[in-house]
Length: 470
Image (cartoon, rainbow, N blue to C red; front, side, top):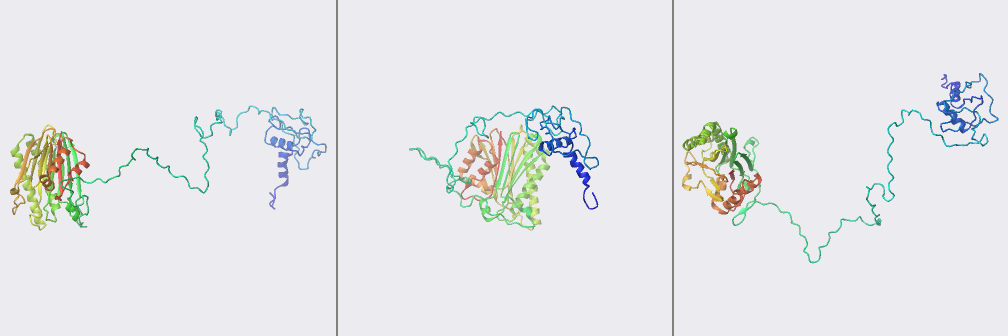
């Protein structure tokens, strides 16, 4: 490039002369025709001018320019050698019968067998798809018939809606689908109670005492060897309506493992008039379970040896210690001993399938029942004269019972909130006998529903513990 920004004219002419202006071997200047330019371009790229499907060069016109003189700036080198198979004749092709200035095209000859170029596909030939039958339009599987075109609807018409249901046959009643209904808690007796069967209000919470919150319902279950256990504790309808906490408490615990394990289920109920009833019930269950767990080895030995006297005295002593701690806790809180107390009823069950002894012990009101052979049995009859309260204890009588279970037995331990309607409404006992007797242990949701069977006039908390022996 010169200083004025122009390229060298000689170099540009030299490039164009190599591309389009190479003279034929005969020394003649190529003519300015389409065939000449195409042949010259193939020659510059290293291709054959003929034999590869190209048109042979035509004869130069008579008024062609003479050969370039040396030194005039045009390329005068010899024509490069032709590739094998090419033709270098200066005149027209032997098959060309027309005049020299006539353009004649021929069918291109098949290209020579050469090695494939790097950009060409070298794999196996692609399989040719079979022609599709004319009767099947594209996009339909074989054997499918094309659908008949639907008549076009006027633009003003709305799109068609869902098809109308078929009219019932003459003389047949129309099909009526069942309407969805809400599942309600069952009841027995003259009618359902006036309270709402579902929770209504939560108890008031103290931001500094959130540990005192008690859930509305507790549900648990387990199976060990021949035993299947279900427990449920539900807040009463009255407490739900008033937003009071559940006064019943339940605790399930397993001490030890294998056949030497002991299962303890404790149920406690705080006094009705105390604001700390739920705390006292929970403490009674916890401290009783702690005492039993620490004496597990001695209790297991006495149960296997069937030492009824030792078991009664030992469990009585542990129960007294539990109530002693309750009185001390009430004094620390500045409460009357009767305000920080609870009734307590427990079941102690060995997990050993070869030992069918079932122990019940506790203090206070409640129920203990058994279903055997389809018959409802009251194992702890309630007597009002045994519940006279004293200054030191809400109930003076310690309750204890040891029984031997049979295959098919169902043992029921419950708080006073469920024992009351069982005594006052025989239909409730009959319903539970049918539900929990020969039918076997239900699932947890079904057990909860059975425990919630309502009886008019009874709205206290309910806690039930059922044990099935296989």
